[in-house]
Every structure is written in C-alpha cells, then in structure tokens.
Amino acid sequence: MTPARDFSFTPDTPPTRGDPQAIPSLTPRERQVLVLLGYAADNREISHRLGIAERTVKAHLTNLMTKIKVTTRTEAALYAYAHHRRIAGPAA
Image (cartoon, rainbow, N blue to C red):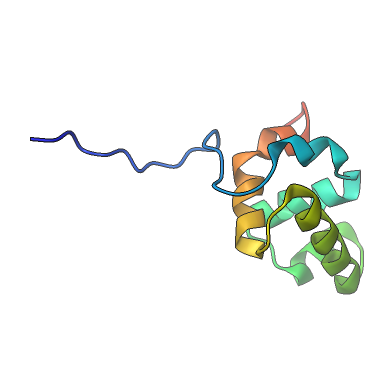
C-alpha cells in the first residue's frame, strides 16, 4: 500500500511560476495592487480601494506581471498568495 499524497497548499508553498527574487523590484503601488489581487479583487475593486482609475490598475498589473515573470492574472494571484508576507512587508 502506498502512502497518501499531500496536495495541500499553504502560503509558504512556492507557486509553479514566477520569480520570488523580483519582489524588491516592485514599486509600492505595484505591491498594493498585487496584494489585493491575491485577495481575488477585480480591477474595479482595486481601483476603488486605492483611489486610482481602472486603466491605471491595468497598467500596474501589466508592469508587475512582467517583473515577476507570470503571464496570467491567475498566476499573479497565486504568486501574491504564496508570497504575501514578503510582498506586504514586515507588518503583514
């Protein structure tokens, strides 16, 4: 009999894509957008919470996704979830 596999996902589990070394290159605003994305906020909610236009949110997402080396919004959200403490800083 083989042991059961553990498929659990925890915030410390690294995502399959993305560059964790890129976090320091993110601007403070890109970090805010990424944290909210990790909480499954859509562009409209992010824009309202940060007091910026949806078009600006899209620009931040494009820039941060390039920096962290992911190609989809889902990958970025998983990256944010996995690296939340490092993205948000010491207070998180």
